[in-house]
Image (cartoon, rainbow over all chains, first blue to last red; front, side):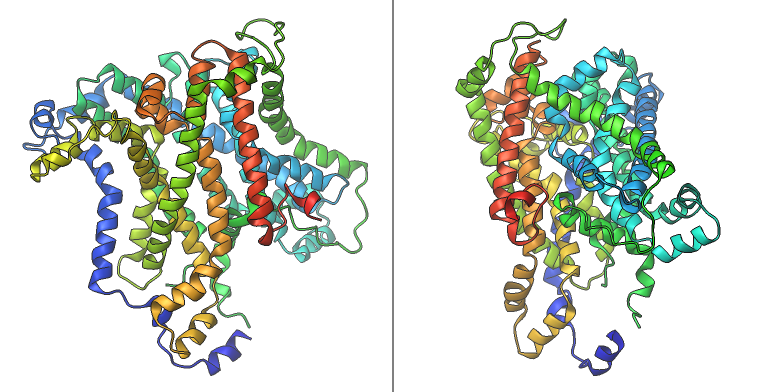
Length: 288
Length: 341
């Protein structure tokens, strides 16, 4: 059908939609990029200045470039434990969300049983309960479990709160696996669990990656939950560490900037590695 | 047959995400396709269901549903977080909250942020999406860069901006350097400016998300419409106004919904930049910072829970009203399903 349409398609330029960019458009795009990146660059470059430079000219360029701020942070005792804690929490959250979410989504997508719609609705309703609403009693639940000031105390609730989004993304994804594949697997003597293990998991990898990235970045950046649950410096994650550092060294602006920019590197690296999945994923297949 | 479709197979999940982000989060699942010839689940099938869904359900009920229900319960008590809650005070917490001028101000700030986020981010994001929907060099790079602020942690954004906007921070410094000293302001502490500063920061942080959603929506508009309009001699802006904007409606309404709910729950940035004591003075406090300041930080957990319930009820009412009157024409949403049918 598409082919038929294309044969009669007029050789019209598609300028109506993709009007070629004029210099003005490029100029506008440059301004937008400058505005978006300016604050980020300010943080990164500010870390290469000394405090006296910052005091004399707050908006200046490093002159000369100072590397001691970054070296001090990297060799000091406080940065790496924070990275370690954040990594543990983010990895555990991601693994937990993917495993539990995939199992539940498989059932919701491919089993027929009474109450399935209700079960899905329960998970979907979770979107209406952001962590802000539940945080106070959640603190009490975690405290009663004896998990205050421990990393599981943070990632176990995070897994629970990431489940609604995960299930909502994965269910239609798993439902799209053609029935023929399932029937072929059954004929070959595969049970439903065998089908899940041998066919669904490999086929779901792209969806799992999308869901995993969202969970990882969400966990890496999360603030409110660790703020409530972690009071001990030894268990701080990076966001709490950045805040503690910036109030502890509030006079040492340059070092705070260095610390802050180092703490955003992991999220930025992770984002740029999978940027096609996130941006491309949200924009769909871009014909440009 | 579908030559165009084939190379996109890899992007299937992505497309799914686009649709889901667009509308899925409040739409019920499509009814399962009937599977002819499949017998109902036997005992083993039910066991599988229990084993596979059980863990997720346990987590979800334990850490999401149960605390939310408990918030409703504790809200009726004067309770400081230790031992069982015994001092039942009925609706007193709620009366205190609703009559507290601090809370009313915070609610006002939330309302202002909701409106301003829509009014400012919406048009900017639409223009940027139209801009980025053109053929140009470095297009994919620009798309990524616009998304960067959205990926950076709120704490990083907050720390960076509070240094940059301080009295002797980089912004005032740059204005001095440019000879515009009379434009320098107390960006964070002047109560007549602070909320606008907050809105500017929010725009910077979240406009990228709107742009990406709108770009996704633009992909869904069929080329044929543009071609037909071009044949009829419509100009670029006429086409955008008569075709793009109306057809982007559903995407726009979903984005607005997410934006409203996000603005009502706003916490991180305000708490990091202004803190619990400065925010009310600078005029940037929100319901959530009020909750943390007067609940946990004051050791008054019963009261904090009551504030959480108030935030939840306000969000829910807004969500229901929005679904009833705005989203109704797009989807019969999960929340209004029963009343709508």
